[in-house]
Length: 113
Length: 113
DNA sequence: TTGACATATTCCGATATCGGAATATGATGA
DNA sequence: TCATCATATTCCGATATCGGAATATGTCAA
Image (cartoon, rainbow over all chains, first blue to last red; front, top):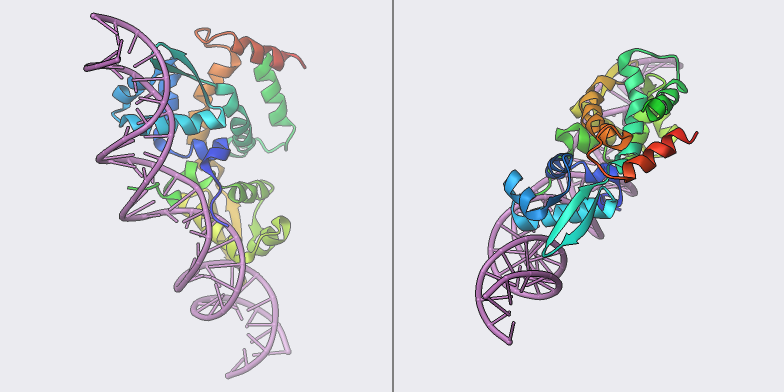
């Protein structure tokens, strides 16, 4: 066996720096491929390939507008990753009153607004 | 050029499932290599190699006790990753009212229970 | 239809990865 | 010292990865 496919899970998808930059770029809203190419100074095929990976993992979605394709962030897909990390937040913030606590926080965050 | 080294940053280090399991295992406290091997049913060299990667990235530290080596979590190293994700939390929790209707859906899911 | 534009795909080479098997290192206790 | 336990390292093969170059697909406008 060898390494697991990047295309199969979010953790691997965001392990790539350029892909993270692309996601960062999409925070402000939908963008065409060309816009990303310009903004990040990457090659067009490079961007298309990264977008494909992000798309397969569900981190972005795409709609066609004329001959352009607009990609949009799907931030909800990052939630499990964020929750995985949240467990450790407890550890570094010093609150060690065990699990259960972080679940409440997540819940509160959801209701918060 | 090819892919960037796993050993060089936290994102790549935690992209591997087994390494995440090892970190999860260490949440409760220091553990010897053998204990991890038993707990996760991985081979000993496999665990040692993953620990090496985690160690090089600073996600774990190590101290010797007799002939055993006790590894300990260094959760602070996860903080930048957590912060990178936190930006997106805004997006899925609905505070970015620039985003469309799917945010409301997520919001409802959060309040739902 | 044709040509220009926007994006996606394919082919490729160099390199990294993971896991297994075997072996090396290192500490302990008899 | 020697045998044993605990861990680390090396060598290896199969496979995935990223980026570049070239090319294919698809859409518009004249």
